[in-house]
Amino acid sequence: MKYIRFNCIQKWILLIFALFLCSCSGQSKTAVITDPQEYVNELAKQGYTSVYNSYVFEKAGKSGKVWTAPFAGIKSFKMPSEMIKAKGTITASGGSETIPGSGLVTVDVNYLALPEADYLQLVNNLSLLALYARSDAGALKKYKELAADYSAASRTLFSVYGMKGNASEEDLRSLIKNIYVKYAGYDESLAALIVSMMSFYPAGSAEDYSFYIVQSGVQDQDRFTEQKNSAYFEEYRTLHGKAEKLASSFTFQRPLGLTEVNLSGDILSFETSDLAGNTVNSRDLFSLHKVTMINIWSTTCSVCLTEIPVLQKMNKQYGPEGAQVVGLLYDGDNPDALKEAKDFLAENGIDYLNIIANEDLKNSFPTQSFPMTYYFDAEGKMIGEPVIGANLKKYEEKMKENLANVSIP
Image 1: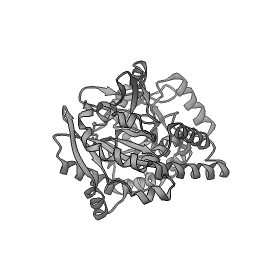
Image 2: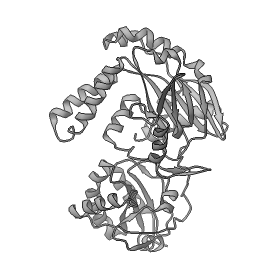
Image 3: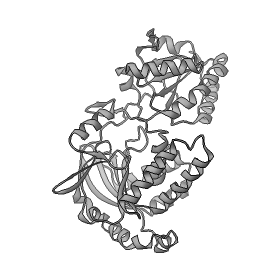
Image 4: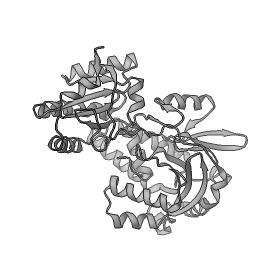
């Protein structure tokens, strides 16, 4: 999202294109989640299904619908009858850590001014068009039209935020504002204004996490009329008004899969192998270069594959200045994925070093999404902050900056 708090349609589009949510991983105090899909599979065995491409999962039973969002700390949300019986569609987005390493988790509960059948058809059409939108101008145009329809019908009813520590409302406001400034590029005054218009309602706590229901103001009726959704306005306004009273409908747990490892100031030490099976030691890897750029990727992440040929050019361009690009294949411990990766690299003439993320490396890197890119000096110390998502311009900017400021000890 970049990983900022996006609105519903932005989050959904990013999921469709799989730019950053190809997979997640991280470390918590009590457990390491290196493959969230395994946890999702366990939820499926219990009868849970994903709520519209999110990390929120739904289970229907005699007592009604229950949502769970374990990566965002929501153990259960018992949906009130008004939401279950709504003529519009109740969806969810998010359900994980907002910014890898921030400790801030969120789930958005959204209202769609469409019957569920129409909404599902719209989603299916968008999914199909997304397959062709990159290469076909007609498909891209239609995709944008349908995405606009989706956006016009979507309203956020409320969000549930979790923050590490005994967090006060002001603590949470401050953290959200800082994320807007640091990751969304807002200036301080605009970010402060946006956050000042939010309402915060304490919802509960679990271990070292505090949770709040957060809500922006109700959308104006004229906006519904302009978008020809006026028949849904009263239901939307009624559901919006009930958010403050929903705290008792939630139970919480400490979020799973948090990226709490901090490599800053520490020397990264590991031993693994390259894709051909040759041993790679971190000391040898780092020591001969001023700057090492490690790009974490997966064969399931389309944007990762798209940027690899450009990283090949970067490796050749900045090699004479003492830099190197290293790929860290996150699913390289899977034989099928390893073969797919080797074939892809060979077909595209990629010869910069790619290594396999063994269990130690998965536990060491604060990686929640692909691609993620880190920079290290010759000692193996992390330089600055990671680049979240695909951002070729920022990769190069950081490479130049680090080469100018770092020297071999």
